[in-house]
Amino acid sequence: MVTIHPLRILYYSEYTSVHTGSPRALIDLITNLDAQRFRASLMLPQEGELGKALKPFVRDIYIRKSVSLSTRSIPKFLASVSSFLFFYGRHKISLIHLNGIGWRESCLLAARVLKIPIILHLHNPYPENEIRGNFNLSLADRIIVVSESMRSNFKNHPRILEKIVPIYNGVDLKDFYPRESLVALSFHREERTFVIGFVGQISKRKGLDTLIMASPGIIAEYPNAVFVVAGADAVEEEGLTKEMQKMAARFGVSDYFTFLGKRQDVPQVMNAMDLLVVPSLAEPFGKVIIEAMACRKCVIASNVGGIPEIIRDGENGILVPPGDCKKLEQSILSIMRNDELRMRLAEAGYQTVKDRFSIEKVVEKTEDLYVELISQKKGNKGRSDVGQK
Image (cartoon, helix red, strand yellow):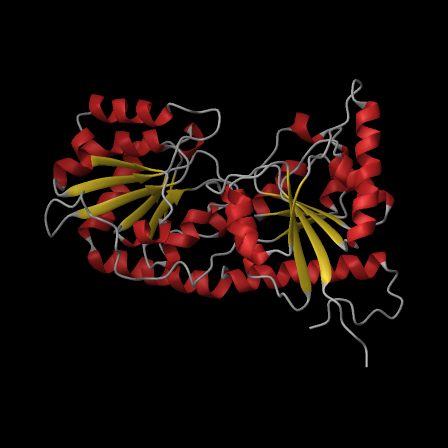
């Protein structure tokens, strides 16, 4: 009888926050991994929220920094490579899953030397100057992108394109589902209040200003409307929430906007909404869309990036041109005027998530990729037991 040992997957994240799409997607993946087939370990450059969130689900958490190569750090880089060579051998790592792009990382060169498969998991598009000359992209065996639209990022790099594997983000239906919200609805003015929500980082890319500019026309027709904004300032965009609040005041709508800041109870917040608006100017995927759909909420979103791969306009949601506040206003009003339309789109969105974006489907595709790469590296020498179900 063949003994099946779990394959040891080492996840590496340069970020330790949990309030952006990238670490949240990593949490969803690791917490739903088949523990009988795979043993997850986590490597972080420092302690933080991500390690605390994943501690119950990983065998080991290592605090260790990778070193990027530069002309001034060659000795330090080589020492780090040597350290990782010893580390991988000691812990019998089967595969490295880097949650981001990196640049010239010692942890990846060490893995390449030992012929350990490398996956780069990219959650955002990258400018040409971050792609050209990036040897992490060359070292990787496969590059997971979160939408088909992200392929265009690499159109000038045919060797990288060959490694691209699109795997959408997923939603954990154990966390996101329709339910009575327990959030204190201090923003509800009366029984018929209509709650229009925005969930995500407060970033210029997320287009919150477009929603604010669209709001006066909505309020003029529906004075019972309120706008709920859940999210904190993005990194390097600190102070943007205050700018958005000042903008709402200039438009005379500040009394209709509630800024909740960073929330730990996003599913509860979403279930307090009647409509989610995602007015992004750029969006590689749009995880909040499938989360809202899982809560049976209607979604209006910009027709950019990977969003059209989720929303079919008029079938399971509504698409609007990015930055077009008038079109956004008209689309929101069309939903508010027609409860039957809102409920139909919400139900279709819910079915979309169940059919295409459940976390189980995402994890299964990722696990299959792990087994494929590890089998290839082992030379396919009759290794039918590798990661066997």
